[in-house]
Length: 262
Image (cartoon, rainbow, N blue to C red):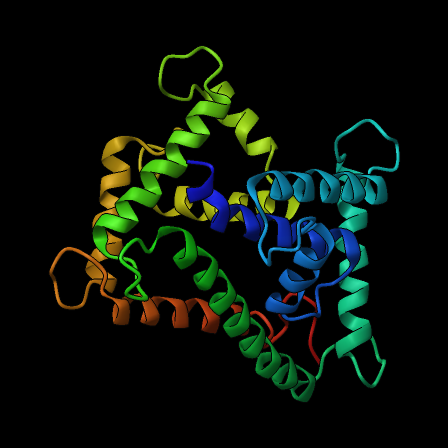
């Protein structure tokens, strides 16, 4: 089971490496290569479960050593703010070529062009890692059955690790403990997604999604993206969804955007 989770675990390690080593500008595949060179002790060209565990633990310690200034083992809001300000400064240093403290339309266009290249490389590297672990018939894609297997094994591993009372499911407290183990960047991204889903689908405004609300969200999602109406997403439909996400991210750099405009 641990082997089946390697593809997703490698992605987490790469994100930790980027945050701890200041490697955000490097292509995803290049970062992955550096991690393998550093932690592939037996030099077989891949990371074993033990090597991956060592990489994850080492990079997390390095990340916390760099950003956990009070040494309490967690990130306070002020420390998180310091991280955000640091990455904003690094971002502006790279892309604000005229040094006026804001992004012109021309500078934003350059960002969008590079962003598309970066996401393509990252997506291909993630896809390759997942296929290596879950594409059982080696046809270069995941069938519905292989996707189901991946979801089930990931869920089983999470349950195994965080189901402290052994009831076969995660309580709210256990879910919180699992969430806190995620890298800070992924936690923040997850929180933004959760906020979006609650704003759109939490019809009774109780701060969580009921089974009925989740089903309504799923139906609306499939209605929009399952264009052939067969009840599942084909590869072309998934590609259309990925492209829309990339376009949405690029839009953040237009107008005033996250870092301001001219």
